[in-house]
Image (cartoon, rainbow, N blue to C red; front, side, top):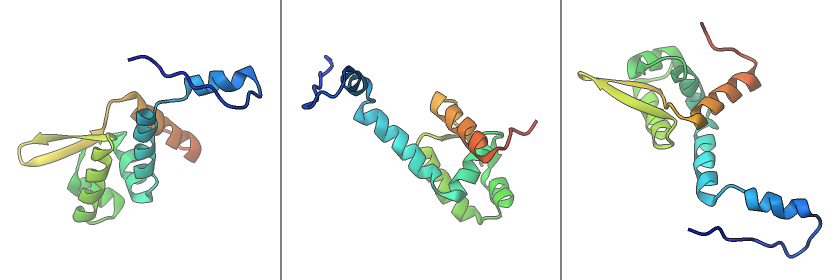
Length: 121
């Protein structure tokens, strides 16, 4: 697939066109926006942070976040659909953890940097 060259109608500087040429695709922006939208909810952000550090079941996530299991399940579904977490079945129990992707790693580190917290040992 060939890249479409965009030429800006007003040429203010050479830099303008170079920036436009490097602009992420609409698909990439949508993926990032969807992830950030899910992390815009405080409950999901807490769950995501927890799952960046461990793999847990719904019951333990609910206890750690002081939420009901149905509420946690709802948030997990949204985080999973955004590609931020993955699930693993062990018998009847489902375990959740942060997805092993570059985007998730960067979001995790950004959260900790902005909140001025560090990973637990």
